[in-house]
Amino acid sequence: MIEFNDVTFRYGSHGVALERVDLRFAAGEFAFITGPSGAGKSTLLKLLYAAQRPSAGDVTIEGRSVGRLHPRSVPFLRRNLGVVFQDFKLLPRRTLLENVSLPLEVCGLKRAVVLDKATAALKKVGLGRDGDRLPGELSGGEQQRVAIARAIANTPSILLADEPTGNLDEGLSHEIFELLAGLQTSEGATVLTATHDLAEVARWPFRHIRLRDGRVEDDRPLRDLALPSAGPVVPFDVGEDP
Ligand code: ADP
Image 1 (tube, rainbow, N blue to C red):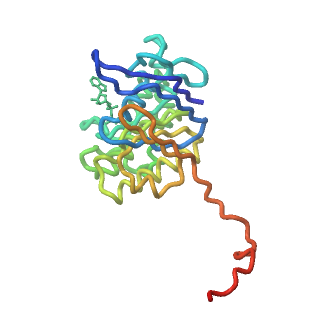
Image 2 (tube, rainbow, N blue to C red):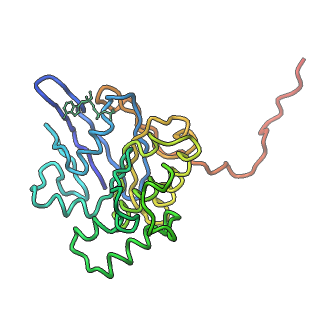
Image 3 (cartoon, rainbow, N blue to C red):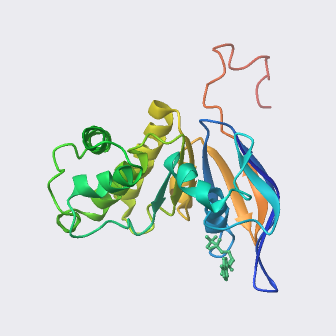
């Protein structure tokens, strides 16, 4: 469970990026976060991976405060949390396998384990045979797949995506959301994704939180796509038009 309890984030002396936000996300939930530019979407995610600290209120994961996490514990938080950005952030001179391996190496995992996990992650995103290639040889959509592989390589329980399709064409965007939705189902991960792509959001039944000026403007729950059980379509005789 992720909880935002009355969270405010201020910058400078006047600016407010988030104001008194209360949100809960169940483990394994998928949620879209939308809103105009400057609404506070990135800030919401940054508070979760401890790149920002709340000015007031607290953010907790499984009951543990992220807002008050000791700086020494931040790397441990990040091991259990994958983040995907709009601009991929891949190292251009490293192969795909090396890009995906690097954060695992930083965690101090053994070489053989790193190789296993990185290979498995590339396979999950459909690039299992491409480990030796360089990012520059790939399309934007494929590069984002590598970034997702890197984010999930250590099987985190939470995956955060900040405008993951911001640099991609429409068709590729849909593929990326399919991949994220698939990971939520197959890995049981909680997936929170900020996006401005409302057409794509409308294609999915997932929870949709809309921010505006740092506040939660709307919070639509997961749509139940189950159809009503078969029964009489017209329950009573409406008669004929006169
Ligand atoms: P979004 O992701 O929805 O575009 P952000 O969370 O990036 O919105 O930003 C929300 C608002 O807070 C914006 O007006 C942004 O300029 C401002 N902001 C956030 N963090 C800082 C910061 N550290 N310094 C200055 N302004 C910031």
